[in-house]
Image (tube, rainbow, N blue to C red; front, top):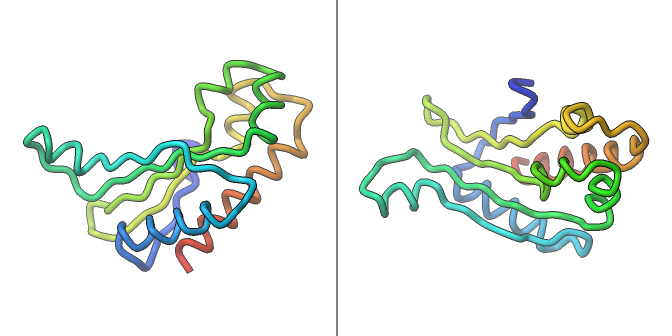
Length: 131
């Protein structure tokens, strides 16, 4: 773990990994994609170069809302975000905030079941996207 991020290698390109991820999220009735960002496309539109970098924001209000009820500041880190990017050496990475870090960052002390559910879900979703 680096900077409280969980970072995994993907054997696929950024686009394939991203497409895998969106398919998994779209096929889960508990999750909803809220926003998709293509930072490299936005950079190109500004006349700049950026290696392939995409972010997807998605959520499950049944899990996020109780956390926000406990401490509204966690909303700065919700909905969940996953980034897929090409690293300096050209390998594809997939990364997300460690939910245990978010628990600590926002002093969430009474929602361990929800935090663990989110951690398991993020781990499973990202593992499926790269396998």
